[in-house]
Length: 138
Image (cartoon, rainbow, N blue to C red; front, side):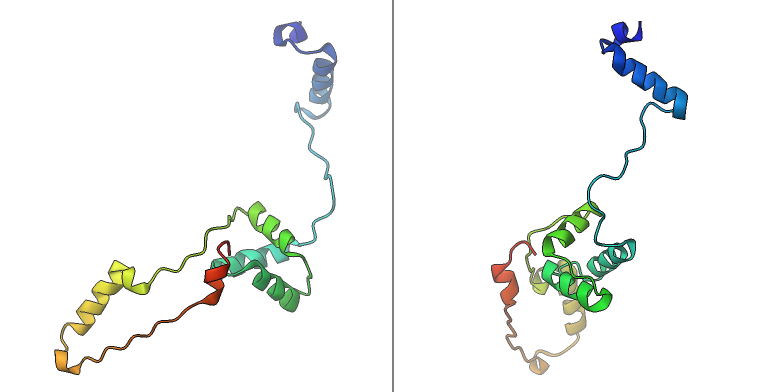
């Protein structure tokens, strides 16, 4: 009767009922399929800590730190998949000039406002980060 009402094969309904009788649920827990993961729980915690500390770190830099601090030699794809599994996504890497941050500009105007103009010396301190010009995906 259940199979007719649900429009399902009789054998599927029998298996689900048998599972319900055995374990009290309609689905069994999945057995671990595939290879065992290379990165341990401790290594995953390290990944979270390093990305939280320096969010703009490159995957190859993470790879070097894993090797030097934990002795784990993994490929960049493994690190990428692990970070994705942890909920991190890759962002387009950009650098915003500090002068464009309104709060920093306001702080500067407040700090410099009491100085007479004769005491001010301005210099252009421009710099280029070569990594951000070629590597757009971190």
